[in-house]
Image (tube, rainbow, N blue to C red; front, side, top):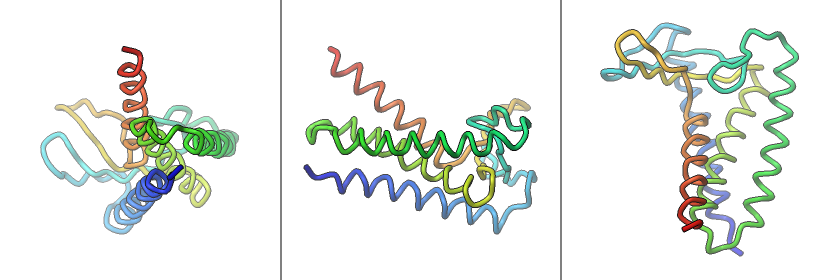
Length: 154
C-alpha cells in the first residue's frame, strides 16, 4: 500500500504552516492588524489555549495537556492513515490534512509554549477567532472526512 503521497501531504501542510508562521513572526508586530483585503487581516497573535483560544488564560497546566493530547492524537491519526485502504483516497486526504495541522501546532507548542495565529477574518466590527494554516488544514480535513462518510453511507 502506497502511503507516501498522504504522508507527503501531511509534511507539506507542516512546511507551509511553519513557513507562514515564521514569515508573520518576522514581518508583523504582535496584535497590530495588517490589512490584506476586505474582511481579512494578518494579525500576529499567540494562543496559549486550544482551538479558537479556548482556555487561553487557564494557566500553564494546559500547555502540557494540549501538547500531550496533540501528540497522542497524531499517533492515532498516523495509525489510522496507515491502516486506511488504498482506494479510500478522500479519507486519506482528510486524515493527512488533520495530521499535518495537528503536528504543525504541536511544533509551536513545543518550541514556544503557544501556537502562533495570524489569519484574522472579520465582518464590520465582528472578528472570528484568529487562526493559522494548521487550523485551516484541520478543519478542511475534518470536513472531507464528514463528506466522505456521508457519500459512502449512500
